[in-house]
Amino acid sequence: MLKVRNLSIFYENALALNSMSLDVNAGEIVGLFGSNSAGKTTLMNTVAGLTLDLKIKEERKGGERITVTGQVNFEGADILNVPPSHRVAQGIVLCRERHPVFRDSTVDENLRISGYTRTRAETRARINQVYDLFPHLVRLRHRRAGLLSGGEQQMLAIGMTLVAHPRLLLLDEPLLGLSPAMQGEIVRAMKDIRQQGIAILVTEQYARPIFPVIDRGYVMENGTLITSGTGMELMDNPEVKSAYFGM
Amino acid sequence: MTITFRKERLDRGIKARSADIYALASWRELAYLLAPRMLLIGGVLAFPLLRGLVDAYWLRVMLMACTIALLALSWDLMASVGLVSLGQAMFFGIGGYITGYLSSTLKWPPFITIPIATVAGALLCATLLYPVLRLRGIYFALITLSLPQLFERIIEATKILGGTDGMSGLTPLPDITISLYVIIAVLFATFFGFRRLIDSDYGLVFKGIRDNDRSVIAAGINIYWYKAQAVFIAGLPATFAGAFMTHYNQFVGMSSFAADYSVLPLTSTVVGGIGVFAGALLGAFLLVPISEVLRAYGTLRVVIYCIALVVFVVGRPEGIFRYAQRKYHQFERPVAVEE
Image (cartoon, rainbow over the protein chains, first blue to last red):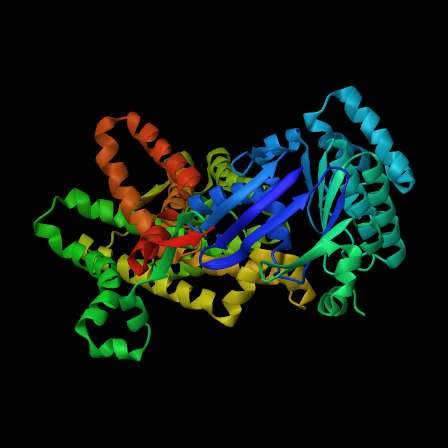
């Protein structure tokens, strides 16, 4: 489904991603592990197309020059130069890190905005699905999103991406700053999302909470791929085990 | 394996060499450091000496450019605290009216009225804006947009301070060369002063408030008090410009609150580069003369002017100064990236 080949990204002269290759197949949950500055978010933003936008913005501002080389293929087509809005229509939807919601809008409005690329009836149906997935959100539907707790905002943020009807869902550190119980809730939701046939690429610094649900995992360090494999294979690597599983 | 190229940006060798004290050992490095600075400073200082060579009209244009440059510096300092002003004319007008009042009723000489108007005007402006300093972004901008018009209408309606006729026949300034040097001295004092200020620990608080005011509050700093101080400091050059031009024109009227004095400084800063005071200076010295040259095109002047503004805001938001600075200090070369 998603094929990343030899993707390198420079922020001016700094190498953020070094010849990175990665695959996500249909119906899979793929984990992407790495510490801060490993290049996880850069990879996510490039797949979602935000890097393209940032590149143009920085060029105009005379800021850092961003160079992207390599290929990003989605269902056989090269999407490296496809604008982010088109990618959403094609089914690649990113949930950025730190629960990005529209703070001044209510939960319901947030979900409705996210259905922008879809028809009204479809949006309504999908919003109901989101409420089924996160029953907790139902009683918050008229509350302002900025006043929700971190966990509630994260549920909303994931819900928003689902309304956009993704086929490949990119979750950037969805468990960041959440309690263990709330983390469990999100991980359970990820499993449910996979059941709907949506492939997920998820990044985390700490692999343990999402370890049970991932089909395969990749480990990155300083923009470079260190190792990859099924969850069990990763666990067998002692260095990976101590760094990302805390064991 | 294909090889693609990306462009790499590197500092010029001469920049690295002239970065430390050893620059003093070589004329080339000294020239590299001093040439652009001296071009601006020397150019401005030498201009009044051209008196016999150029039309006196251009000396007045220079005076106008200095005035706009002072207002632009003032705008830029306010912007560095996160206060976007659309009403620098308020500072200009208040400075002008205070000096006009002192000069016409009390008959005080300019070297007393101008300093008093500068300080009192800035104080008055800071006091007036104090209640609205809690507003941010567009809300603050809207208030500042309306205030000069408010003063204009008050003067028109109540007929105080000369009403629609203004106050004329004020004490003139000595001849234009001396006047120019006075305003140039103040301009450079403001420019270098502001640059120092913003780099000091005190100025750091200003920049912090612009970047993330919540964090500054969390650091135990009263941001509203700091913003008020910033408005006062930023107000000084602007009220000075108003007071100075009032004496120069020997007249103060409602035109001192004209939108020109709000819009021109803003555009100068945008074209020159926001956040670097040299940009504001450069912008004013480019835009004011250009706008005079374009006078020949009549109303079309505004069209040309607007297009230039749009081009800069959309295409080069960094401004001329930062662009030129980068080209001066850095070069680019292609490097191969292996895939």
